[in-house]
Image (cartoon, rainbow, N blue to C red; front, side, top):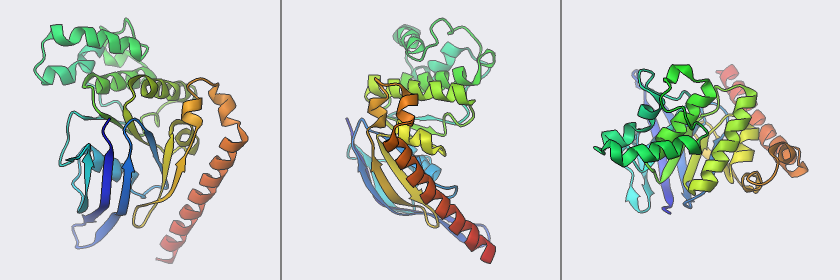
Length: 267
């Protein structure tokens, strides 16, 4: 498995009137392959910016980032992205959506049909290959998005609020699916979420980020993701250790939000 190395990362957005926004500053970390990292923090702390730099969608204004020793300079099939809204092709079937990557890579149907069927089974959609995307619920569409990402066999899966638009029950089920996929595939996952509870449950490592400029303020190494593979998740969420960490992070983020609002009020 390939490690992700981020060194002295900076990101400054230049605005049209000559102003600038310092989105990220002094980001340094090494993420071992096979980890599940969740990025958490108040709005404007640079979570999605960092994710987009890892994806290769944005070029940082300082520092460098590499995967397995190879510098990231743009998008690549070794890093798959899952968005908050599935970004699926509604005019194509579920199977066609999942096979999009292999087809774009020039593979023949005989080379990917079996893998599409396998992935449908993996994400709990066996028998839905011929369905149209618009016929599926939001949760089912996100399952398709996960399968489409996996079809390219990326080294790393990047997720930007993938469960944010789902109802509470579906979201809980999808959290279990993400953990199952992480365990089954052993892939590295980096996930942005605004839910503290979700970040603690899914992340075996959490970065809590602070804004103005965006930076990593706290790091937590947690046991709950691995425990959730064999234990009841609702019981885990009631564990005193889980509750204590949740309250600690919530208080920290709340203090940051209050500080931000105070600065804006003074402005």
